[in-house]
Structure formats: C-alpha cells, structure tokens
Length: 445
Ligand code: SF4
Image 1 (cartoon, rainbow, N blue to C red):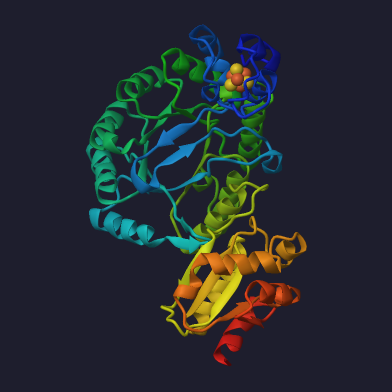
Image 2 (cartoon, helix red, strand yellow; image 1 turned 120 degrees about the vertical axis):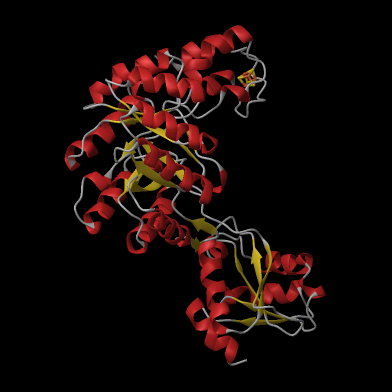
C-alpha cells in the first residue's frame, strides 16, 4: 500500500536544502506521495530509507515499455484522472490486428500500406505503433508472421496466443523487438509468467472481470514481474468503459497496487463496422486505454484517432510552441519578403502553410511569445514593438537579405511606431489580419 506524504516525510533528511526543486522536504514528500516527483530528485535519501520508499515512490500506474525503434512506446505512468488536473503523459498506443493465417503477400501489402499512414501535424509525425498478431492455430505460422512483421517493418508487436508453445516460438523469433506477450490467464499464468520472467518481455494479463485481475497481477508481481498490462476481459461496451474507470480510480485514488498497470482495450472485438470501432477506439483513447487494438488501419479512422490522441496527450497548461528563429519557406533569396509572427504552434503552421500555398518564397521570423497567438501576445506585452525590433536585430535576418522591409501581422498594427523606433532604417508594413489573406497579399506585392 502506498505511504502518505507524512509517512514519506519522516524518512527524508529534513534539511530543506531545496535541491529537489521544491522549498521543503515536506513539499517533496507530498509530491512523491501523489506521484508528481521522483525519489531520484533527492540526492540525500539514505539507502535504508530508499528501500522503504521505493514502493511508495513508484508511480500509481507503472510504466511499461513496449517495442524497439522509432515506434517504441512507454505506456502507463499516469497520475491523474482528468487531464485538466495536470496532464496525461503517455499517449495510447494504437494497434491493428492480423491473423497468423494471413498470406505472405497480403501481409507485405498490408505492412506497406500501414507504413504509409504517417501524418505531419504541428511538427509531429503522427503514426500508429503496433500490430497485434493473433494465433490462428498453427504455431509455426504464428511465429513466421510475427517474425516477418518484426524484421521487415517499424511496427512493434503484440503476440496473441493462448498456446504456451506457440507463444514461446513467436517470442524466440521476435524478442529483439521487445513484443508484448498477450495474455496470461488464470489457466496459463504460471507458464506465461515464467516466459516473461525468463525473457524480460512485457506481459498482458487477462481475466473475466476487474476483480479477477487482482490475484493474477499479485501472483505475477510475487514472481518479480512488474511489466504488466491488464485486460479486464469485457467486450461489452458499457462494462469495458466502466472497467477502465474503475481500474484508473482504484490505482490513483485507492492506492490499489494490484490494478496499478496500464490497460489494453479491443474495439476490434466489440464492433461490427468501422464507424463503431473508430468511435470505441476514440472512447478508449480518452478514457483510459493505454493500448487500443483496431481490426485494421484505414486512413479515415486512423487520422482522426491520431489527432484526438495528440490533443488529449498534451499538457493543457503549456501551449504547443515552435522554436524561435528564422524559417525559410520555398527557398527564399535576398529579395524575398520577411514576415514575423509568434511561436504558438498553431499560428506558425497556419501562417507557414498559407505562405507555402502562395508559392512566394519568404523568410518567416518566429518570435518567442511563450506560445501565445498574435493578439493574445500583443495584449500580454509579449509581442511589443521594442521586443520585436530587438529580435529582428539579433536574429541575423539582415545578413540574409538586401532590402529592409518587415511585414508584421495585421492584429499587431499598433506596434508599428515602436518597431520603427527600434529599427529606424527599416520599412514596417502591416500585413493582413487573417492568415488566409496572406497569399493574395504576397502575390500582389
Ligand atoms: Fe529535502 Fe532532499 Fe529536497 Fe533537500 S533535496 S529539500 S533533503 S527532499
């Protein structure tokens, strides 16, 4: 059972040295108890106290790493029920299922199609991570399909079989890719537990209810296995949804270590058409599936799910930003126009997209406004004329161009005078207020 903040405090050095980033040992103890700090942040905890605190300082939902390479994922490690309380940390991994009786050429075609499902959005590459291979009854074919996916694609694996020998063969062929073994049940917990322990691979646990999971995870933890993913077994929508919430609440609010693991959900086993399956996957991304398994990847369902995931797994207290600097759009030269805007990611991507669409090569200066859009930054004094002027001077754009004209956003028209004071030999031109008017504005010049 987790320790309280006061119990943790009693084991700390109580010097209030602040090296952990908070003013007192008590504050650190409270953060540790609520999963908002790591024990490693305090360099002065004695070995004896560290041992006692190890369990208390573990996150209420343990992190589990699955896979290798660019599509590897850490899941779990969440500390809040609601995103607005702090943030959700580790995005739901999205998987598609294939049966091990799939023909070789069909598998290769599928992998090529799935690999192409990658979308650039606000500076991120959005893509799914996993393929779940379901054993259709032939152990050799199961291992062969899993091996083909592991060796020929970036996708990571969920190996789905109830047959211990088939699982061993598939694990042997793909262990270099750190696949998830799915799943230990009441019947197979000893064998699957032994396999996970021997290989160090993450293991999923499946029961027929939330309560049924507890003795299984307790047994596996007793065997020294903590890389667990849990499945309450329900494929009824209402029950599966309830189970997700019960598990999250039990782990975070009840301190229930037996349920403190990331979950896996199977919309593919709960729906008969793509629309319903997509809707259920969206539900599990929001609450609280750490892995959601689809029957296939189709761009019309995958793209909205990836976008939903991007939106949910960002820190609501920190706007998404791009780095301050000079951005080249369409190979600009010394005569190309120079525009400036703020570093709010959405502003950057809309403005840069419109400039790109205009086919007029340009220099786009991005000024750090702590992620605020133009009007908000101006109102907050983070896009003031003197600041903008100083930034233009120090960013080095003057070395790249022959002219001295700066185009500012229409919403910041009132700072023209201040910029002119800071940049007396420059011409300051007020551009359009709205980004969609930029192409016509740039072409007309
Ligand atoms: Fe206390 Fe350790 Fe933080 Fe120093 S670093 S204030 S000793 S918890």
